[in-house]
Length: 317
Image (cartoon, rainbow, N blue to C red; front, side, top):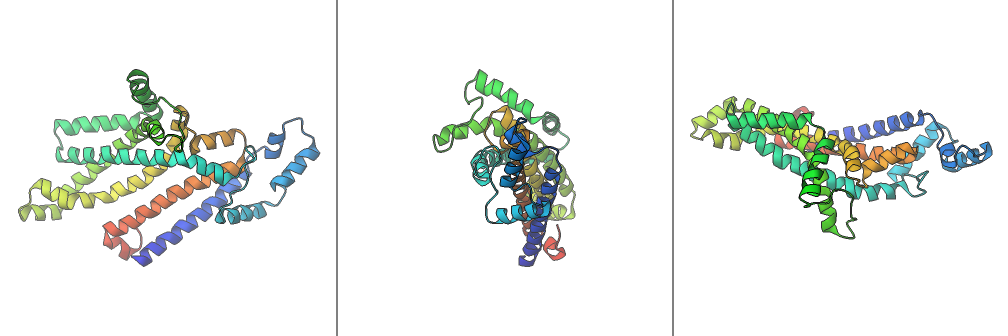
């Protein structure tokens, strides 16, 4: 297991390094000059040149790349061009909103999606199975920002149970901060729960026809006991894959949902940084998102090895 984990970690590190290089050069190719954008169109060429030198933009690209990667390894993501503050501090402040939002959405999608998928598989071909699959198809088709607006109309405007938007800092009122994330996390979670329900149902239906289920039935177990003791674990492999991918979709989805609910998270920070051409902030935020996604996939790969020992022997999931 240690060798398997080491191989997966090396792949994780190589992915991060490649992603950092690609992000740097892609953003470097974008037209426009951050120094000119900061000073405005009335700035003199000398003033722009001086600011470019202060920002380090006059150095060759490979030197700036190495400096950026070296700084990140020390925890220094540089200074924001527009906000004149350390990028690391800005990212940490916004992650305090985005990470709880993403984790809440992931938990809600698992709590809703997996039981519905198991129940649907057990009721295969019956009316509850059809109803769940129709709702799941609807959940996949409807975008999360529409769910967000409908949830706001019902629970914030109509029933007044939850705030319609905005965010109270955790340090001021943790309970109010948590309540402010409920509707956005539900809007993010419902489409993902629909996908999970469909994947879990399909995986479990396939497993029910396997020999080990028939063997378990021959030993005297009921179908429900055989599925619960042996089927669910074997059906988890495709579900784990979807869970890892969902984390990436949930983080990307926060860019839209955070704007719908006016949350000061990482998604809104990236949106603002792009519009202001604050490239060093965009780079820092993007690499943080990639670290979060690849770290999740790394954990999923390790879980593969724990669930199925054969994968540890092959070395790849």
